[in-house]
Image (cartoon, rainbow over all chains, first blue to last red; front, top):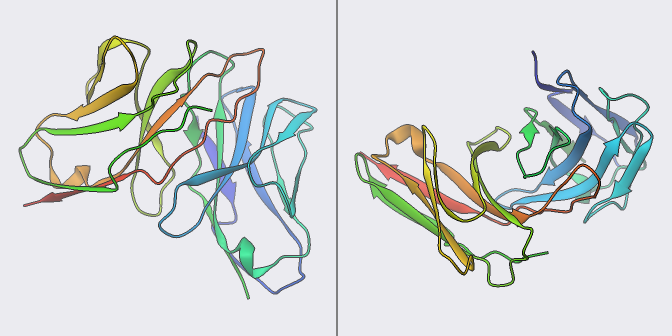
Length: 113
Length: 113
């Protein structure tokens, strides 16, 4: 299993541009998550999904959108990028069992200039 | 959500046992306690999880007192490769409900030769 994969690894955007961060997991996990991590800080939850077709907001959803059309994929869309969205973005997944064990991808480092 | 408090940083010499304590005074009955490890430029990695008493796996032990208002992650005989940020999370996720477990700033452990 590849686990959780994210693309791209790095990206530089100009203010106002849009992009989609891709996340795919091959573990057949129901739950998927998007976090952002600013320098020297912990992770903040942006959006999550409990299964295909079901998504909900996390702590910091403004400026982002998500969709979950399949179990495997959970893309994160940035519309009208702003410098405040400069961060490292992590995708994670979890099987539908109790407990908090999440499996994280390698992250996408995004810079908005 | 249960708020967690842990030391911002700790130093330890190689070969020593390291104990990192996390306070979670308002932990709920159904909450689990989970610890993650994060190396620079990587996503967090699950270390250990527990509900009460003591849990041990191949890399760490987790001690939880009877009142569950705190927990201690114990790393035996640390090496330089254990230098990382350690996060304590408290929350509950099940297959039928949503979750908003958040990561705090974590404890930055520096292992010294």
